[in-house]
Picture 1 (tube, rainbow over the protein chains, first blue to last red):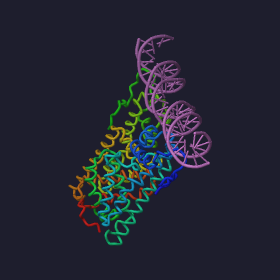
Picture 2: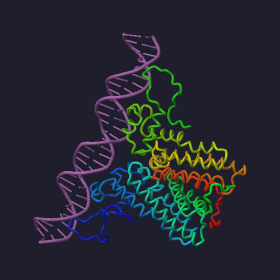
Picture 3: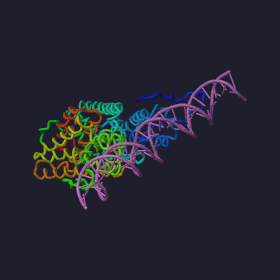
Length: 220
Length: 220
DNA sequence: CGAATAATCTATCGATCGGTATTATATTAT
DNA sequence: ATAATATAATACCGATCGATAGATTATTCG
């Protein structure tokens, strides 16, 4: 769970003044789609207020400025859509199903009709990584975390004898994340949902295959 | 070779008026770095004129507007830095060396100290793919082309008996491009040149390995 | 009922955006 | 020289940028 900005008590305490109409999470979800479509620089306050349905000052009272809103939107994405692939991965008991589910959910989210193509993090925030150090740190942390969780699972499966110890679990985890990133790029470049889904089986097989990291191994 | 805008006769004909100081290719190379750093929306005319060293109207006389300049910059990138990995791939006679060179050059370009991190196409233009259809088309075309060239080479190697026919050459090609995209994302997310280069051997081995696309194949 | 409080919106800020009309400058042709 | 021509820079355009001051509205407390 991320806590970049102040929390919002769930059963909101009846307080004195005018009742709040801005629902933080809802507004964030709308903002996510705007940033996802246009990137940070391309997401104007006009687009953001239009999408969230609240005025500029209301948005600024909840989030400090556009930059903070962007960071909060990245968190919201990572806690929501961005977390689904890993959740699906961890929900499967069979490692083959788990890898498949990870890529399948990822592919579907990258081409979901209700959202922009690709991945907010891999396709949009990544652009801002060069100029906004905290965005880069956020992306790096997110990748590291997912990779660590996947790696841990792979290590368990090696112990269970379900996965070969070669290549090492951490390399296998890196590979799975690489293929996730690549799917996002492909989706953003226009690859259709069907095409992407057709590739899931092959990608899952690659991740699960026994592939010695020793480059001298014969390929023929 | 791309020809989005008017060509510039190489031994420029001595013409009547004031001699031209703007060197199209040089200006484009500078513009590439600005877009690469800031993305399309973040690359202001002020940054672009500062980088190219010419004034706004001069830039507009050579390229029609910011959008056209961006498209031309993408072309310049693809014809230059973006073409190096494929060139290195095709320059190697041994397929193992070729795959390694492709990933190695790609990794080095993604972390070159003289340029922004990552890849202009995969990390910056990709953001604009959602809002600028011709950018998306350009990316798609570029990917397709590289993939086709790699695929053709793989097919030849299968005929030569240097590569197994399973997985099919086109899947192997897709995989190599996926790993290239993933390297770009990783570089942009902050992965160091050394870390990236350390992964090249493993990635090359994955591409070269015999990995049946049949998902039922045992992974243990 | 006011008074106090809190959240909202209208209207507007200066700065910067992409883009251009105009003028200045450097060359060749006559 | 002077005219013709081509390129470049100065200065500025309206529009939009992110951000905010101040007025407005809706609620609770006394």
